Image (cartoon, rainbow, N blue to C red; front, top):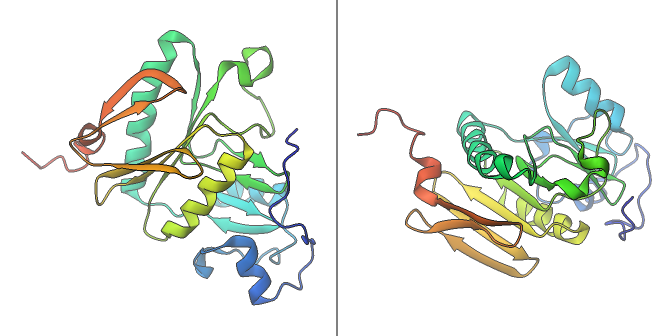
Length: 224
């Protein structure tokens, strides 16, 4: 179980949040993505499961507030491409698991986050097995967020800081429209890669490389 300091020491689970309190909890997230049933501040993991089961929607749980993940076809495609490339590298070596956007993880015991793509080392799971139920409380070695309409850069940067605080070693923010990837190896260590650059797995996936342009080249199939 994570023993990290909670993001909000004044947290309380109730339905009397002011606008200022709500903003402090969720950060720079557009309010239209905040679910109001149950009341913000009272949501639980069961509500995340209910919405996923009944509505086929992914929500994150941020200090008792349900926030829908921003999605688009382009984001889903880029996530699928990245999962393919990472899995092709990691699977033959039995390095661990590459997880899709519903690979939830608890951070600080009150933040149920769902990165768009993540990689978990084999040794991070007891017995070298994936969980059959429930959610992990150990941050993945690599977490990836893909910018969608409805996201804000500040939102993703806050999420990046949370993952690093929880033990993540490598974090990528992917911007499909600009065909750029911000690579972070620490909370204050960032570099931006463009289409002509090569993405690598650093110390998390040594030997993994991918030309940034290759990640995006099949988005528009009509292109020559």
